[in-house]
Image (cartoon, rainbow, N blue to C red; front, side):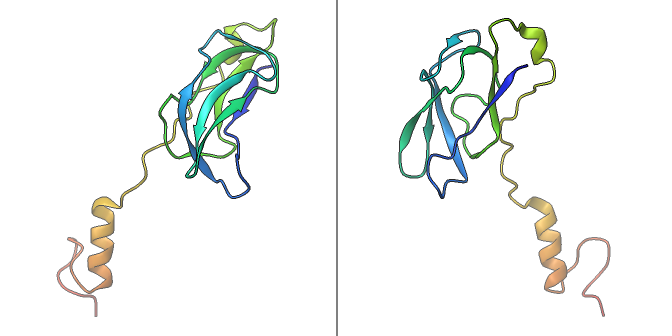
Length: 125
């Protein structure tokens, strides 16, 4: 069964980090202790080592991704006798862009201060 490689918590207070660089590619053999990637925190860039043996089956989070949550799957490791068909259930989990509020926030703000949200005129009485 494929093993999910999770975004590590490199400090007790870390909640997310950036995947700066993959040092292994899909298909590369991996042995316990091999450096898989470089992870950036708000304070440092650290190497992330494999704890299992196998082969990188699929990279789920691309190099350069920012705001990757701790314990989010970032890659999948295949065992020695597993093939790529075992990866069918795994999909990319790249972080989604942060919600900036957009038009909904403007409508809610107008409603809160008594302005129009577009579906009625003036403040509610």
